[in-house]
Image (cartoon, rainbow, N blue to C red; front, side):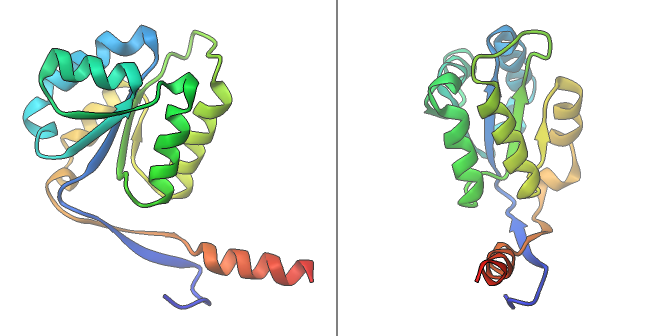
Amino acid sequence: MELQDDFIPMTIGRQKNIALIAHDSKKAEIIDWCEQHKEILKKHFLCGTGTTARMITEKTNLPVRAYNSGPLGGDQQIGAKIVEGRIDFVVFFSDPLTAQPHDPDVKALLRIAQVYDIPIANNRATADFLITSKFMEEEYDHKVINFSKSIAMRARTLE
C-alpha cells in the first residue's frame, strides 16, 4: 500500500463473516429468513448481537457467535469487528417505525459499514438479493479509503 493512494484494495473471501442483527419486532422475521437461507448461511461464519444470535441458534441450529445485546454495546462490537476486517457482510433487520433507545449506536454501525464498503441489508428483500448473489460463492475485491493517507494529511494541517 502506498501512502499516496486514495484507496487500498481489499478482498472479501469466499467464506464470509456475516453479522446478523434484528430489532425486537424483527426477530421472528430474521429467524425465518435464516431458516429459509440455512444452506447458504451454514457455509459462512455467523455472529450477531445478544438475543438475536441466541434465538437464531436455538431455532435453526446454525452456530451464531453472540456479542452483547444492541443496547448494551453489541452494535458497537459489530462495528469494531468491521474496522478490524473481521466482518464482511451485515444483515440488520431494523424497525423503522419504532424508536430505539440505542439509535446513535445503530447509526454508527451503519456509518462504519458504509465507510468500509461492507454489504449491509436492512430488510428482507435486500437480504434476499444479497445472499443469493454470485458473490456469496466467490471472493470479492473492492477498494476502501486509505485511512493512513487521510490521517497523515489531517495531521499535516494541524501542525
